[in-house]
Length: 126
Image 1 (tube, rainbow, N blue to C red):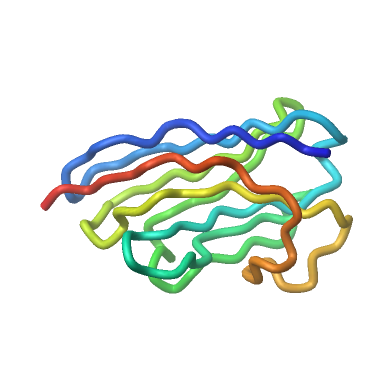
Image 2 (cartoon, rainbow, N blue to C red):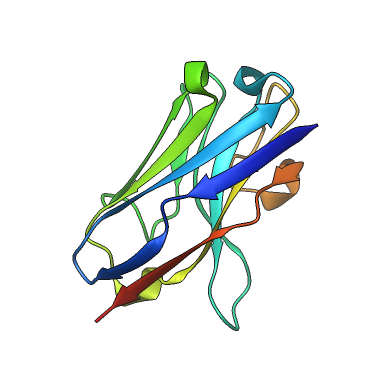
């Protein structure tokens, strides 16, 4: 079992930045791919960014490319999402997810992930 706890959400003006963190505990962290998804009110959950367990594979949704950066520190059992140039349409609850398998064929596929955090709210005002 893996427990995931997100932090770093909040209220920010458009154009601002936030850094989300997701701390993992339980089973060996470094063997899992990690990802961020988000869900806005009235919308389905959507993929944001993902990183493989060694960091060699990274994927981003088109809507966040050039603005968001995902990274991980396996020594700290933590994955990060640096969000820059935030837009009102980035407003959502952001969820961290991890895959218990060593290889994740499609990093953007939510069905690949076995463990999910409770989410952290990000609100971007115009």
